[in-house]
Image (cartoon, rainbow, N blue to C red; front, side, top):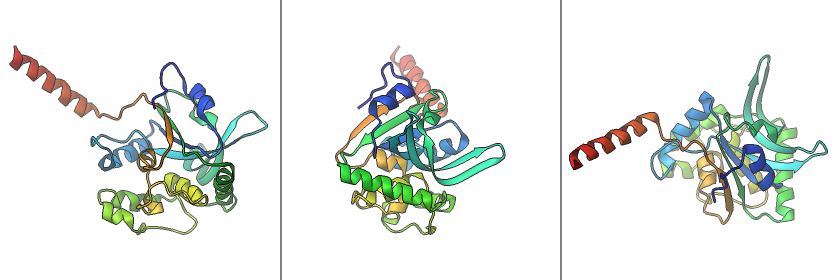
Length: 229
């Protein structure tokens, strides 16, 4: 369902966040744009995906903030964090920098939620790193459903990119978001379109239609108007 009317990112998250739920988002940095474009073979209309990143809501802490578990590239001046990390969800509050958000509820019971959280914390304590290599392997296999059913040819131990980390944690609760897909091939777009029963709350501001396609549609409309007149 689309819950975009009148809500900012913070209000949307406060309304729908819960332990164990999956978050999806996209940003405006070059890596997000690249990942969205690369997933276009997986979308029904061939446009770039709405999503470039996936994470798991862990819990609301004593500081009053929701904290999330994620595998990410976090680059700041003189500081680089690559891999599984725990962050305040307020990093996703900026409406301009994070135009699209979704929160997916797969109806986990209390025991499953704890299993997902423990799996994420185990990765965090083990200092699992973000796998650009595996991400490249996933991008390479993306046009072929047959290749994606098999293991990632560039898989590495103790390494997971964002959506693969989410699937890893859900597997601990015996939940496979796409049953016929290798866990280290799963993308944010795959999670968004999981065939498993779930509720999807979405806040969409960037539909992912390129400027060239918009121009093409506008041109076609003008030509149709001229022919019709």
